Every structure is written in structure tokens, then in C-alpha cells.
Amino acid sequence: MLKQTITELIKKAIIEARQAGKLPELTLPEIAIERPQNPEHGDYASSISLKLARAVGTSPLAIADEIAGFIKPSAEIESVTVAPPGFINFTLKNEWLTQQVDSILKDADTYGNIELGQGKKIQIEFVSVNPTGPLHVGHGRGAILGSTLANALNSAGYSVEKEYYINDAGNQVDSFRRSLYARYLQAIGKEAEMPADGYLGNYIIDMVREIIAAEGEKLGKLSGEELTTALGKIGLEKMLGQIKADLEMMDVTFDVWFSEQSLYDNRQYETAIESLKKRGYIAEREGATWFVSTALGEDKDNVVVRTDGTPTYFATDIAYHYNKFLERKFDSVIDIWGADHMGHVSRMKAVVGALGIDPEQLTVIISQMVTLRRGGEVVKISKRSGDIVTLRELVEEVGADACRFFFLSRTADSQMDFDLELAKKQSADNPVYYVQYAHARIASILRLAQEKGADSTDGDVSLLTTEPELILIRKMLLLPEIIETIAQTLEPHHLTYYAQDLATVFHSFYMQCRVVSDDKAMTAARLKLVRAAKLVLGRTLGLMGMTAPERM
RNA sequence: GUCCCUGUAGCUCAGUUGGAUAGAGCGACUGCCUUCUAAGCAGUAGGUCGUGGGUUCGAGCCCCUCCAGGGACGCCA
Image 1 (tube, protein in one colour):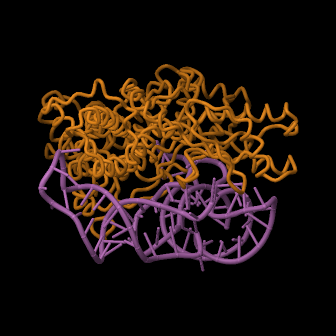
Image 2: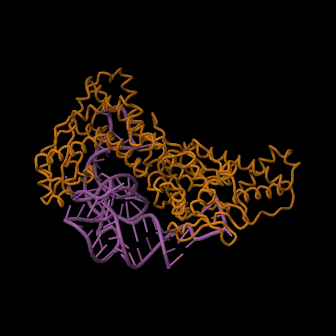
């Protein structure tokens, strides 16, 4: 990447300056390359001399002059200048810039990919909602975050596995089963009361109706525990199927659907707890089993096995992470959780450390609350109360592309308002259309070119010399850097801003530069440029999981 | 009470890990369709970056105080 090339140039220059006695021997700070916000300052800049000034003991400007003097000419760089208070600015060569159009076209679908990850095994687990009810709006945020992050990490050279953890064991599922049982009895005209902690949503009633229609006869022969178990099994499958379908509507898919129950079935659970016990992090007290997180600086210990002998969800989460790191040997793991799990983060990291794994290998991203509004009014979302605004409902109203873009356009750790009415109204001037429109416009140009028999194969990119053309090329060259930033910060929202920037420079180019014209050579060159732009826009939309329309 | 997240233009939010004159979209205002899609373009207005201190060549970004909004503190998940 260009940034690395420039870093190397500076490093070499500093070494040479030292050998020439112009700079003292010191440990070099990391050479950071920045993008100046003011285009007059060039394409890239380094503030290395400002950072060195204190140790060297001379003015940053003088240091910058020394370093700049030793920077060798290169194919990419037009000029190296020094600006107060001590920046070294790099401007790219137009000739090199235009050549990148050919290079992008050659890379095609792999353009933007980088080697940062070097094939490291990384797992990203997200959504993982209890299969006891449909996905609601808030879950969509985590889903989009995870799936986009996975796309970006994949492009950054990681070997990414997307996983959904199915909580098919424990209390909540038990309550789900009993809710189904009660609704079943009611449906066949018997007296039955919903359990106190039951799921009151109408979807349970609908589901029971469907189950009876399909398997009523078979179930009629069962009763009590047997019936509850059978209903639960069918219900979980149906619920999971619906969750899967809802996610697919938004182009969110998984490589692995991991069952919590399997941790018990293959005794991973015992192994994990045993491992903690050996290391002295397990204590028996007050009739329960505790994870001694206070030994690791936590506020309090946490129960792993209850007085009645049943494990808590924390216990299976320990086993689950044992499995991720020690069984399946992921180099790093990303968990995306909802805001209600925030308090769980530090103790989970403590567990990972207690298992002998570097806690740095686990990153937990908290996707903050989504407040739903209709007009000005806040809509309460609660799975228990039955007042659900489902994700499916949202996708059907505003469309998958707009949903993805909207959820993606904010950092995960800030809360967001989602106004349903606004989202619906917005559909005409939503930024998503602005970006897609740029893509469709290019497609339209290419159609016209084809009609007129214009061809770009012999296009000479060195003809692309005007400002709008060069600005467009510069913006296209940013994609690998965006992917790098996302891989490092795990913040995929940068994509939405990049997409808008790219669309803006294209629309501006479009206004100022005619592509298909009587000038055959220029037409060919510009056709290459817009083909490259279409490719980069398409890649960006693809990374965000959005469609890139040919016409609108 | 303890811990976590947030506070930047009228509104919704970015801000490349401490750099140069703090940016975008929406909204407001002014122009631009005989030429490849006006779902577009060009421009104007709009800011004590919640508050007060500190760290240093340099702070929206780092540290501390306080204020405001939200969330978590269960042998629920």
C-alpha cells in the first residue's frame, strides 16, 4: 500500500541522514502517515519531525528539511515539501495516479483487498438471540454490524468465520416450552394458565396453531412432560427457521450455528470448569459453585452452578469460550453483544484470562440501544410484554439496503434513534439512494457507450488530466485504507462515509466531464475511468451487504 | 451508591488513535435540465467541540472535577 511505501521512504531517509551525521542516533517513534485535510498540503503527510524535535533538540522545521533532503525520488511521488511547523508533505504524480485506473480494472473484484490479516483465524459471533421469539429492531443493528465487519475483515486478509450461538439450553428455553404447552392446552379448549415468566407474545399462539395444524394428531397422543418437550423441540426449530429467514432478508448469513446444548452433550462444559478449578478460580460456597473473579480484580464473584445444581448461563459461556479458543483454536474472537450485556464484558475477559488465554484475543463489541420511534413517540420494545416491533416488519417497510446503510452509519457505542415514519418518508432522499444512484448512472453511461459502439480496450489513461478526474482517482485509491482502518478499529461505519464521499466525487465528475463524445481517444480513456469507479462503488456497496443497481 | 456508553452546526452524526483553517447529510437560502439518469451539480449561512482545570511545541481526541442523557449492577439470559 502507498502508506507503507511512504513510511519506507521516510525511514530510509532518516537512516541516511544519521549516517551523514545530520541527525543523532535515537530510537525512532512509529512513523505515522496522515492524510492532510487540506489538499494544498498534498496527498500524504508525516509529522515525524515534530515528534523528533524534543529528543533531537533542534527545530522541527530544520529536522524536516534534513529528512526531506534524503528522500529518494520514486515512481509514485511528484514532490516532497516541508511546511511549518515541520510537516513533510507528499504529493502524488499524476502519471502514477492515472495508471492506477488500469490497475484497479485488473484487480477487479479483489480491488481493495489487503494482506493485513495474513490468514489469521478470526471468529465473529453475533446476533445469537435466544430462539424464543422473533428478532426485533435492535437485533438488526448487531446483525448488520457483524456481517459487515466480517466482510471487511475478510477483505483485510483474515480467515473469518461467522457464528450464531443458539441458546437452546437453560431457563429461557424452559419458559418458552412451558409457554407453548400452556397455549397448546388453551388451543385445544382446556384450562391452562401461562407461566409467570412466560412469553406472552401473540406469535406463540400463532405458532401453536401452526404446530397443531401440522402435527396435531401426533401430539394429541402425548401429555405432560412429553408433550412439553415435543412442543419445545418443534417450537425451537420453527423459531430458529424464522430467525434465519429474517436475517437472510438483510443478507446476513452464518457459517456455523453453534448449539449451547452441545457443550453439555460433548462434555466441554465439565472440561472447562475443571480447567478453572485446577487453576484455583472455582470456589464452593453457600451451597453454590462460584467463579472467583475477585481474584482477577472484579467487583464480585459470580455463580457458576446454582444451589439446585443447574449451571447458569455464565457457566455455559465459560465453556463456549473455552471451546472457541482451546478447542477450535481461533487466533482472535469478536463477540458482538447488546447493551444489556455490558456488565458481562469484564467478567468474560477475566474468564478468558483465567483459562490461560491472553484476554486481548477476545474483543467484545457492544452495540448500543436502538430507540424506536413512531413520529415523536417512543415505542417500547419488549419481547416479554408481547409488544414487538420485529426486524422483519422494519425490513419490509424500509427495504434491506436502507436498513443496512442506516444501521451501519453510526458507531456501535452510541445510542441511536430509529424513527419509523422518518425512515419510511426518507426512502426517496436517503443517502443510500445517493450512493446507488452513482452506480446506476455509470451503468447507464456504459449502456450508451455500447449502443454507440464506443470501446475502452485501447483507452489511454494518461489522457485523464483534469481535476475532477484526478480527484475521482484519488478517492478510489482510498478503499484499501478504509478496509485497513476498519480491520484495526473494528468500526465498519467508515464504509458508509466513504461510500458517500466516493459518490460525491463521481457525481461531480459526471457534471463536469462528458464521457461518451466524438473524441474517440478521450471517450475510451474516460470509459476506463468510469468502469473503475463502478467497480470500486460496487465493491464498497458489496462490503456493506447492499445491492449495486444497474438502473434506478 | 459503583461501573460502562454518550454529549461536536437548528436536527442526525463523522472526525483516519495527539497535528496544519473542526467536516458531511438533512433542513434554510441562491443559482443550474436542447447534450451519457436533476434520486444530480455549484454556492451561501450556520461552531465558546457539555463545564472547569491539567499534561505539551500542539487537545474535539489523553488525565482529573463537575453537569446532563442512557444503560448495567440477579443463584435471569
